[in-house]
Image: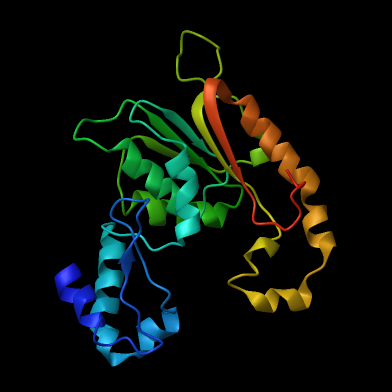
Length: 229
């Protein structure tokens, strides 16, 4: 990949084309500030663009922002962990979790429960994650995250299933993404974020109730107001 696609870009850099560079903190991850429009429109990048599309469909690569890759990394997920992805769609972080759980050649003992309240987004989650990275260790459910039901995996006991790792990427106003979407300022007002506060707290509280003793909980929200969660 480096020789065939990245190295030639050194000679094409012109303010729109930038050679991808490896992230120092995430293995096998590369980053480029090139826009999607540049990837699609520049003839020099046609072969690279087709490569990205093909390999993404096959599940060999995944395209996402570097910042969204941080939460699963910090959770330090192991093959034996039971992991709850509370608001999982469209599935990029779920794919990371699957990859981490299958970090060796053995069939992992752990479990990934990926949930989303939106039925259509659950279909997207299945397509994005499970069709590209098939695994028998991931279950997709369609529930309201604020009222996630208690589950049991042992028919001989009624003890609820608790999770070693919980990823809580709650619904938010998205105003913390002004860096990449400055046009959002035109329609921004504090009511959008404040209006979601109660729902965010309810989701976080229910997710925390499903966390096992000594487990790790990570909540994400792209907001300006730090007191949202």
